[in-house]
Length: 235
Ligand code: GLP
Image (cartoon, rainbow, N blue to C red; front, side, top):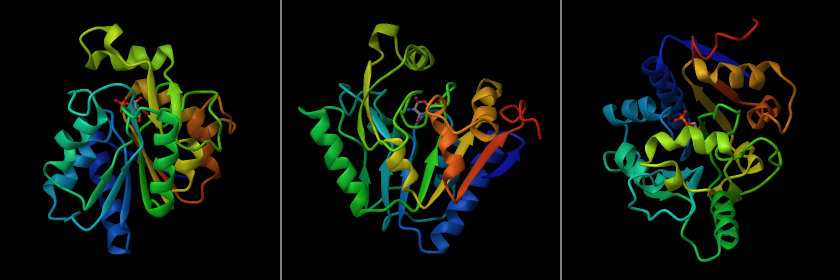
């Protein structure tokens, strides 16, 4: 794993942007995108750039189950607000959290990934080491599936909702196996509350208890983290 320590999230967004730009110069056509507060500075750098994504494809990691696409907290809406309205892609895929049958929607999504292999996958990380919505205990080879959110993720995400009861309890997420198929992976993390997860990801054993630790087994991973997120690393 390549670890780049940056001053802050603005520098991190710029560093991730430079890697994406280099990837596109080398022929990358499919970006795997993430939501959460972490990738916002990257998306701002993409928006501020003169890069054109209109011949590229994007594939998002996850979506809540049961939120309307235009709900302000849905990941469909998040992506429009933070990137797609300003920088449209030729095709943008986000899992369908409103499908009548979520398992079928998950299988369809995995087919989309198979047909559009992800060149560069962007990831954030949860405080418990989750990636996408693959919570601790997830199958390290799992594909896109329906997941039940843990209390810690509901707690962390409730700040975006009026009340805790409004936070969806389920999501549809690319699995860890789907994520590992990405040819290159950029994981971004900022702030002290990610420091334990980052230490376990880089220095701990590969274990389903820390889903991001499996990235140690991927040949092309860069972690872009700020000093606070790096503060518990021993080296
Ligand atoms: C959610 C998302 C993850 C994201 C995580 C961290 O649970 N499903 O993809 O990485 O939150 O979010 P944040 O970047 O806001 O800390």
